[in-house]
Image 1: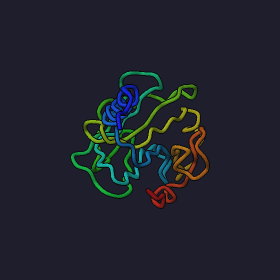
Image 2 (image 1 turned 180 degrees about the horizontal axis):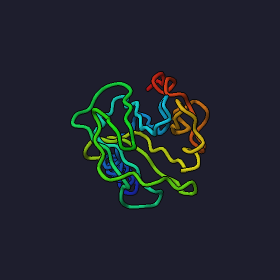
Image 3 (image 1 turned 135 degrees about the vertical axis):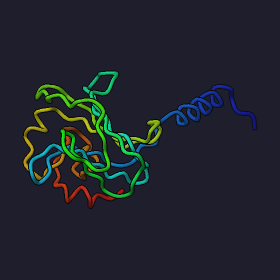
Image 4 (image 1 turned 30 degrees about the vertical axis):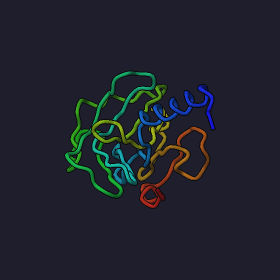
Length: 162
């Protein structure tokens, strides 16, 4: 059976596009630890993540990144502000987060070919958190798929299924 050229062109295009798309698995989170310090966290599932990114929405460059030398399984938590984070090192200074600005936070492999979902959150949402709370993408919370970001306890983040 002969396939029309248009069908073959569409099938080829879909294959090429899917090969260029990053593998997305895992949930990033921004929140406050029990002491009220700003933290990043990730439940990476099957993605080997080593770089965390914070970017103002619509910007082409990261505001700041955090890196670790090797991937690790399970929930990972680190300080986003100056302080001691054993496995993660910061590149650049974290600016004061503007309440009116939307930020994107995600964690990836070195080449960004594998990454977590992107968390879209405003500075005001972060400022409204209390100690021990984190923001996650809404589809990871079981509370729906529409923004705003969902609020969970840090302990609940560890229990999220992949």
